[in-house]
Length: 259
Image (cartoon, rainbow, N blue to C red; front, side, top):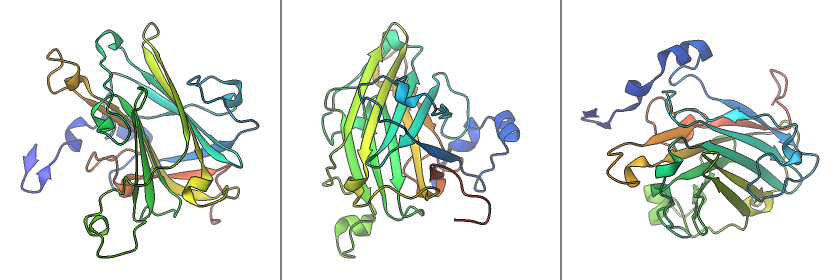
C-alpha cells in the first residue's frame, strides 16, 4: 500500500495469531538471543551440524514482520576468544526453480538468495556493521554505518554504508538440491571490529536475516519475494533499521537489574 509517507507493507503480512501467541508488539518488543561460548571452533565448511555446534540451540528466523513463510530459516550462534560464529540453514521448497546469481564482492548481492548479519557492539546501533552473503563463489558485501566522524563526509551526511570497509573473515556454503536447502557458515573475528572478545553477559544489538528473491528466478514467480528477520521489523520491514535490532548476549543473559 502506497501512502504519502512512502510504502506501507508490514501490517498486511502480520500473522496476528503468532503476534498474540508470542506477545510480540509493534514498537514495543525485540528479540533476545545468547551466543553460546563454544568449547571448540566449528569447521567453516558449510556443515551446520558440525559437532562443535552440539550444545547451541537452533533459533528461528521468522518472516520480517511475523507473517507466514513458505521457506523456513533458522540459525545457530556462538563465539570463542577470537570469533563470532553463525550457522544459517535455509529451507528451499522450490529448489528446482531456484536461480543463484553471482554479483561478486560488493556487488548487488542483495538481489539474489542471501543471508545477512548486523552487529552493533555499541549496544545501541549508532555504530553497526552489515554483512550480506550469497551461496555463490564471490557473493559477499560488507558495509559500516556510523564509523565516519567527519560530519562533512557524504556518507556521514547521508547515513549510507561505507563499503570501503573490507574485513577479513571466513565463510562457506553448501547447496543441497536433493534435500531442498542451502547453508552458510560464518566466522567473524572480533579484531575486525577493533575489539577483543566481550566479557560474559555483555549485550550487543544486532539482527540476522534472509532474502529470498523468487521474482528474479523467471516469469513463473512475478513479484514474489520473501524476507525473514530474526528480530522482526513490524513497522517498516527494512533489514538495516537499528530500531528493530534485537539484544545479543555473550554467554548468558545477566539477572534482571544487572548489565
